[in-house]
Image (cartoon, rainbow, N blue to C red; front, side, top):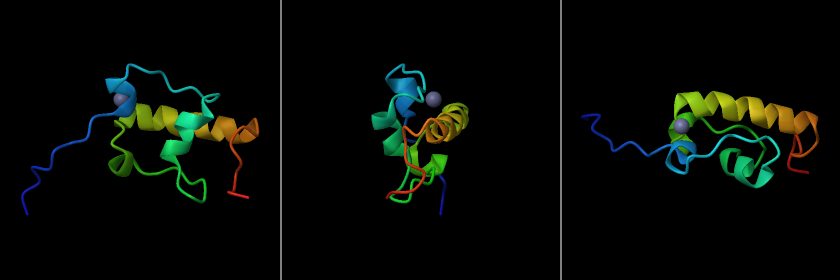
Length: 71
Ligand SMILES: [Zn+2]
């Protein structure tokens, strides 16, 4: 199969947003039901923002803004 798949544009690049660990509503879009960080190919986030996102989510967990598990 040819890999001419249309690449989804990065949410943060398109909206010109910075990854903010306080913005849990946005962060929640990039974690699954079990609060695991979704891979970049699932979310369409570029590798640069994916890395920032991972850091933000981890920080957000430490600050207890985002629960480490769903319960
Ligand atoms: Zn990006």
